[in-house]
Image (tube, rainbow, N blue to C red; front, side, top):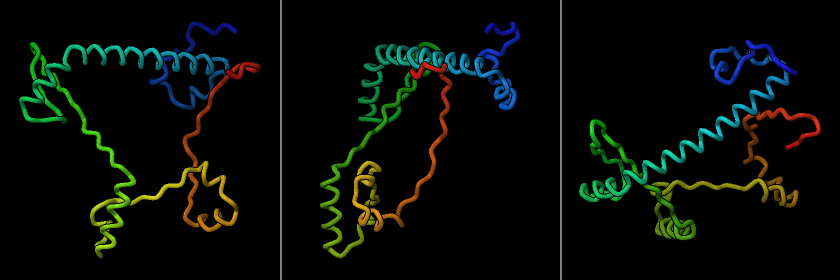
Length: 162
């Protein structure tokens, strides 16, 4: 179905109210949804390429500047022409969970409160919870809260589930 020349495009969406967009024909909503998804995919690809090029251009210099500053990670700044390049290498720390659990037990055995030293969290994967026998699930039920996630709506042509 052809749409009039004044039909909103993806570029028009930020200036339109939600109610106005919601009232558009479903065929147009499907087209806009597809166009936005394609734009996002294209923009993510462009960002990845640009970030890769910036890494090629500046990674060595950033590593040299970071080493000169005596830093393994963190943010450093240096000039390139009339611009300041800000290169951030975040610190990513991973903890061995089994060793942490052993340390927590040692702290507890020594009479100290492990909560003074570490954050302790328990998690139950939903897949495991669903596989438990009813009796075990019933015991854990009071500690479980289920909240809905974010609603996602996709418009697909009938007969086209992909």
